[in-house]
Length: 189
Image (cartoon, rainbow, N blue to C red):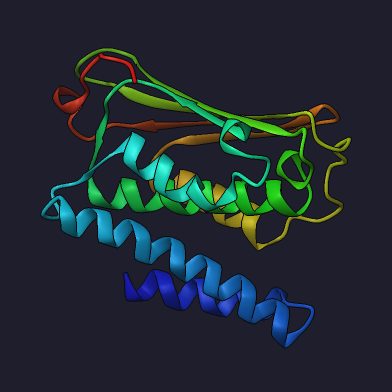
């Protein structure tokens, strides 16, 4: 955990345009880690439910009202390191949606859906982030720390990430193997 905080701090400071920008970004990223740590402690560090992680990461971002973010998916228990990675990924996507994307406008919406695919011996959780109703999206000219963080977390979890800057809205698909596929239950929320 401390190594992750150190890496986040170093990278955030390295890419900051000002001290105030660095402070704000760093506080947000550390707060995302604190929130998921709180969830893990509440669940005795066994892991965390993906719906809980999603709702916690996005609760403060619904600037257009309660309907600006929708979530849907089966009950999936994640090991602590996977839960932390998903919390950081959702924080980065959410922060960018508020600053530049769908959540920067009243009419913008974000859909977060997930499912479990594969076989019981090789189950994969697939999370889809889809933005619409916001300003026209333009791909960034450089990969910032947030993009590198998303890619690094996906690699660390032996997963994949497909980040698409469609003009209608950012789309992101993340596939991560479940360490214990027997933990996935197939009822929807």
